[in-house]
Image 1: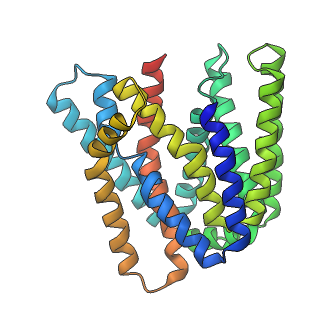
Image 2 (image 1 turned 90 degrees about the vertical axis):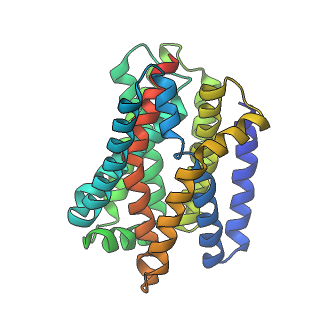
Length: 293
């Protein structure tokens, strides 16, 4: 809860930046955060899997690493050959991944209920972002898939996912798995996110949530799981163990940006890249959370 208080302050500060900085400046700041903390939080998956199953032989670790890289490559190819399917999968995987991280400490005894909760919350966040930045989102989707989406779809999907999420959290309150104070806090944060998403550009709004409400909390969870504590010392160890994969990831992205002349597809390409690595990373984090239970 202590970090959440800090995150709220940082979110409001980010809102101030959204008001006083122009669009190009917002996008530059967003890219800096995504390429640092955003990519970093998904760069330690190999060590996480070794921690989940320390008895694995070197050959099994190699197979996992090969399958991990293969998943990223397949994700990339899907965005190239069947972008509509890949984008839909990216949204679903990301939504579940965001929700799993957010609700890990507040679960019911039903695995199915929890999984639906993860998905409904994550979709609510994403469709809130899309609905409040509909023009930019439609442009990104068009660049990725050559499909023009009616902005009303975002509102209907937000209504559907939001209604499902609200029904679930009220059930959790009724079953005393969630307190009224916690519910009020979650509703308040949705209101805060709505204001930020409406004020900021699409990429900056995404970065605010992705970094401060997902990536950094995820790094803390991973530190705790890997080293048993949160400290400067364990953070340095985390960065060292993540550095090679992190450097490889940003190097690949930097090379792609370097050889792209059309700046209009830079942001769509960024989302495609994040989508490709999300597929493999989300499975790893789910395994970590299962091992912690």
